[in-house]
Amino acid sequence: MANLSATQQIEQLEAQIRGLRQQALAELHEKLAEARRTVADLEKQLAEVTGNSTEGAAAPVRRRTRRPSVTNEQLKPLVLKAMAEKGLNGLNAKDIAEFVGQDPMRVRKFIAENPSLLKRQGAGPGTRFFLK
Image 1 (cartoon, rainbow, N blue to C red):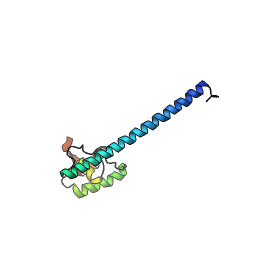
Image 2: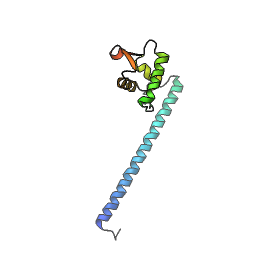
Image 3: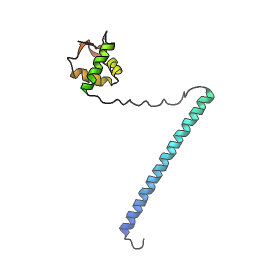
Image 4: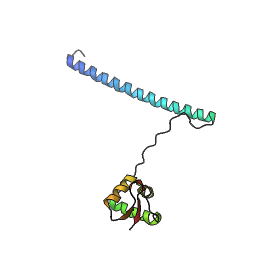
């Protein structure tokens, strides 16, 4: 380091500090992950001993299911099939969405964009759709 200028030495030391900080952060993340695994193991042991499921434990987070995106052209035959098979007494958008495997908001958007496809009866949440 004798041949390096003061600014070069400072830059090297700052780089060294950044590296040490990243290393410390990585170690903390690993400790946290290990602690979570330990907690999960202890909860499992507690459930086995007491015979209860994890009562006091927080419920696992349910993630939103990812559905493949579909175009209106792809969705149209699915909606028509759902209406033909299940729609004798009419279906609401949520029921149609469950049948075709899409989000209810996507089905509502499709119906709004294609008003001539289905007959609408009712208003608001009680709206039911029928084949024309």
